[in-house]
Length: 329
Image 1 (tube, rainbow, N blue to C red):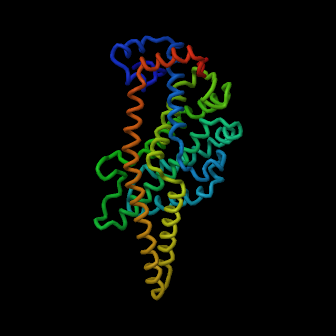
Image 2: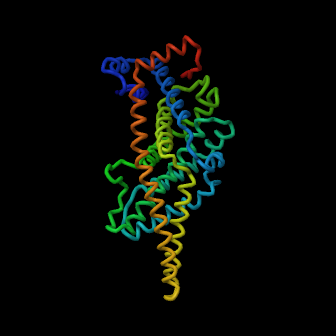
Image 3: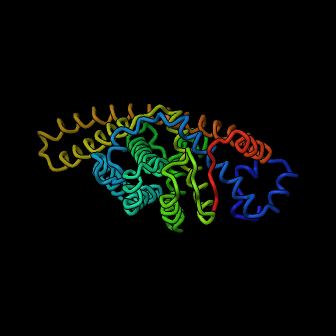
């Protein structure tokens, strides 16, 4: 596939003959295919978007207004410091901190989306913040298991049996960071906000220049929606885990400064906190790893049915019955 505007999902779901035809498509035809794919992606997100985002939507695009903002940043700082002290180099720490910084940078676009009720951009914000919480959870879990585990296994962000298992949020965070760096996110969000409607459920006119970026962002957000949907996880679960981790770290600091007669009591208290933390962390880890597998299977099944023939039939049917469509201009 040489044309970057060709939708990869549709291309890969199509047979050899249709792939060859897609490579010769003109701009107008490619625009129609992408428009239909956008509606399918958005419909999929709406269908499975019963995720418990907690207070995230209430911050209305300003991540710093979240009660979890400072604890999350502090957790990442602590993990980074402890990892450094143990000579551990883990890129995921920097990736997660960069994602937070990027969400802060995109505050104007996100807050404007909440003011104008631009639903898709609101979903991008909610899913990206939730992904940051999940990635932080992953880092805390791996570090705690590294320090307290019976075999002191190497600190490495991998699942128990599959290298990519349980890493969906981290993968999407890295995709998000890359799209921020090359201005795909900013250009697409600004272009979408200037479109002729506030969401993707009705008539919408989208500039062709942002089509590829919008499909990429929709694809990323749908991956996260399906992941969190399968996990049935709540934002509150992550916050509870962060609080335990920070409490355990605080007790470590207190113990290091306490006299001998008080140190033992502090360490006994810390041991109980860490035990509860490990139980919560391990429970979430199993849940998220299973959700990762299930969401990838769900995504693959949906994508596999979105062939060029299916898309073309859907476009024709919409013209006949007058269903809302997206116009590429």
